[in-house]
Length: 225
Length: 225
DNA sequence: CGGCAATTTTACAGTCGTTGCAAGTTTTCG
DNA sequence: CGAAAACTTGCAACGACTGTAAAATTGCCG
Image (cartoon, rainbow over all chains, first blue to last red; front, top):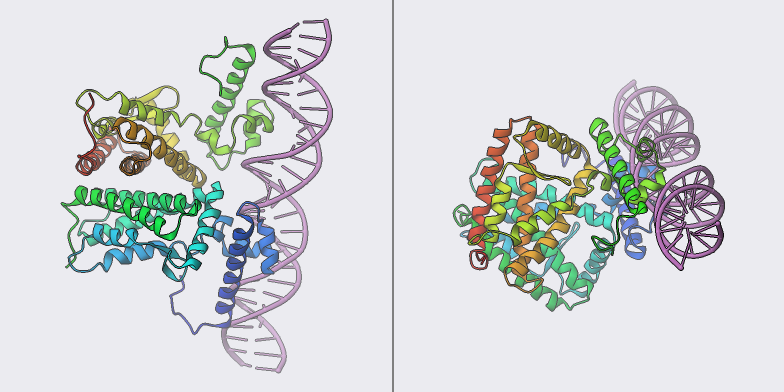
């Protein structure tokens, strides 16, 4: 695998990066405009001025075009756990992150829904996803992968051995709660609730969920430091 | 929607049922023999002596051929909750069901893994599913549907209004635990652990998980009657 | 700079799931 | 029995995806 800072960028590398970006951007725009199902890979390729084969060269499946960089989300979660403030349990840290009115944006991190531009962008994302069974299915697969990574991070952070049942259970429940958050968020945004209303509903759900998680895992979820 | 016992069977009905069964059986056999991905719908149609179009007439997608009647599982769960014995909480009832060494079989209910025949059949099922990303994805979609139905049943059973946050949270966590059970079960069976060993691992995981669920939901999960 | 090797991109042909359509076939019912 | 309704089928077509081998591009070395 290429190390993160191997050689000086190199023409080839940078060109590849640019091509990949171009394809992803074009695809994102087209999906937002016409919906996932009604855009063909051939159209994307044409709009990005590459061949269909090249598209599949960079993205294994059409769905990957939509969820490009979605895996960054899990990195954010893991960092949240690892770098939680002193005295804060894992549940505390995740609670703080997920009860907040922010949502993950590819590349640029978590953004507040109070910003109308971000609200609109995320609403489009959610609506596109919601309208496509294939995308909804894909999201579930991603969530499963997240559960595994989360489980490892949690185990390590709580001083349990890898694959400890308790870490697996906690991770699975956290991911379930994330799924719930997503559902609440989507539902609220799809009916065009105002940013404050969305925020309120999300927070209420997360408060409830994490309170219960705290109760369930009080014995092993220890504060940092 | 057709009521469960509409007219006397009728030639047409029974013929349809037979055709459907034939297709499903043939598909199941072929998948077990060669793996999901390596069997084409055309082959299934040929082996079942119908046209490809007829196959899609009965089953919306190829995956549905594999998971035919999997939705019966959720009915079993819901019944488990509704008909739980006196003094038993929802968590108790689900715990008893899921810590047991039995697995759901389409049509015939839950069977013990101690029976070598059932063990082998279920192992084949699990192995086939495991080998196919498409099937794994599909299972996740089914699980999501189960979460919704479970949530309704739980809400009703605990005297909460439909869509009560707490019921949603409990349901989501229960489904997460079911997913975990499946993972433990699969892993154990794929490495050909003996029935007792599989049973032990499943039970240990379920004991741990439900103990935590009980703690988390002690305030609302009331015993029956 | 020139030219060869490695890497990317592309066209082309093909597989497979899935759908729409119009023409059979079978079952039901009056 | 005969027409309507319900099923089945063959055919053509679409779109995601793959393999292959040829063409274009880029990196590198003398």
